[in-house]
Image 1 (cartoon, rainbow, N blue to C red):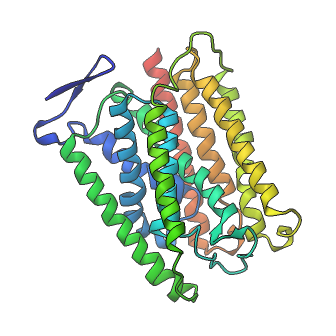
Image 2: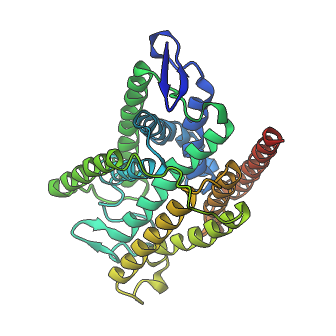
Image 3: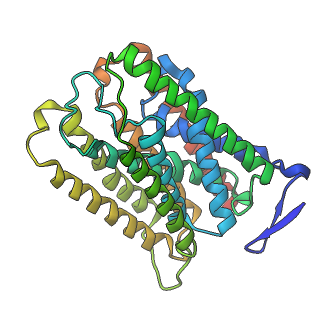
Amino acid sequence: MEQTLGGEVLLESAGGKPRFPGPVLTLVFLSPFIAEVLSGATKTSVIFALVPEMLVWGCGALLIREAVRRWRGGWPSLLMLGLALSIAEEFIVQQTSLAPLPFPGVNAAYGRLWGVNWLYFLFMLGYESVWVVLIPVQVTELFYRKRREQLWLGTRGMIVAAVLFLLGSRMAWYAWIKRVRPMVFHVPPYHPAAVTVLAGLAAMVLLGVEAWLIRGTGHVVASRSTPPAWAIGLVALVLGLPWYLLMAPNFSPSSHSRFPFQTLMAAGVAWALLTYLLFRHWTASPQWSDLHRWWLAFAGTLVCMVAGFAGSGHWLRIDFYGKIVFNAIAVAGFLVLLAKLRGERA
């Protein structure tokens, strides 16, 4: 079967199955691998958690990518749906932004108001939309440049991915809510207020509508210019690393009382808005190239790898050295991708 999108021929096999499973499997793997394993959030000693993460993050990122391609949207639409995916995780699946933070030594009261861990939630909104969705989609589409504008799933494939996403969400909910919180962290059950969950669902719907409404943005504007590719990477590092400061007041007891959390919230929102507007301007330039995309994705991944070592002094040895190995493999993979891009340009 053939479909068209933006003048490109979209090939799918009969029955709606993906003709090219490579991009599908790559994205499903890369989404949790970049966001969870390379950052150290999922450690080597519990690497089995990558399976449900592939179902939730991987299938979630895949569904978002496919929806935006069907809408002929740009990366701003990807971002909006990525924010919706983050809210689903934080308010419904694992509810980590609603229940009091259970981690040892954490200052769970700071930044908590109306049943929401606001600083933690703001951090996760940025982290999960960028490192779970935007960067893995970008890296996958760089590996499969000729299929970047193609649909990778037919209708049946979308249904299968949605079912796997729901299955993985159920597994993640049970593992965290029913097992890890009470049995590992020994905290009592927490039941978020219905109005809070409903507010999260409403926000997800609004973000979905917004993603549809802005589907025409993020495309080329002839009058725009952009810095050299290496400068894009440097800017990504400068803007990305400070995002982790939002977590410091909760996880560093000495810093939790210096500022009202509302001040940090306002600064974080302003920082995120500045980053969004800056890259929206640059990516709309006709000079924006795959080399720019590579530098942006590489620098963004470096941010989560470097910042992920915070607190590693208390890790098991297998977790510390495992992270180093996985990070080294990722850097090597990026260099192979860079060589591939340069070879195709030659």
